Amino acid sequence: FRNKWSVNIKPDGNLELSAENRTFDLTETSIADGLWHHVAVVLKRGTSLNTFIDGNETSSLSSLDIGGINGVPFLIGARYLQANGQVTIDNHFIGSLDEFRLWNTARDIQQIKRDRFFEIDKNLSGLMLYMDFKDNNNSSAPSYSHLGATNSEESVSLLPEGFSDLNYVSNGPP
Image (cartoon, rainbow, N blue to C red; front, side):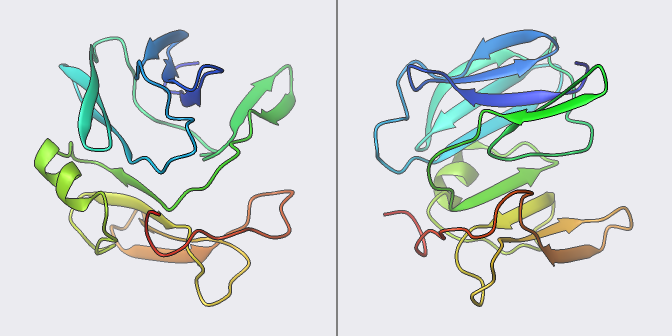
């Protein structure tokens, strides 16, 4: 389980992080309330893991026992388990996503508050993965951009296995 992360919505609607065979509570108030929420999780190596919901800090935990994010596949909206040669994909997310951003730099509270309602330039320094879940030219899959091993942008469209169609979100939060 080394360097594997799973951010989960618990039955009570709160978020938790599972990493290194441990769980960490990220929120104390349910986000499963039918409203749009911006969620940011910021890892600062050797110091803290901070969670922000709608621009407000909800938790600050020690990051000393939290490893990196590593491995393939990288799933958003489901959990990947592999044991005894068997692969299981479960815990499917039911809801809407507008964007997903993964940075290799820790975002500060001012950046989080400023950028949470806006689409951003996918070429910003430190942005490693940007997934846009709005309708992209009537594509059947979301588009994503990431910096490849050569630090050059690579863009493709993808569709998760087992999905034949997606319902896109409107342009921005409701």
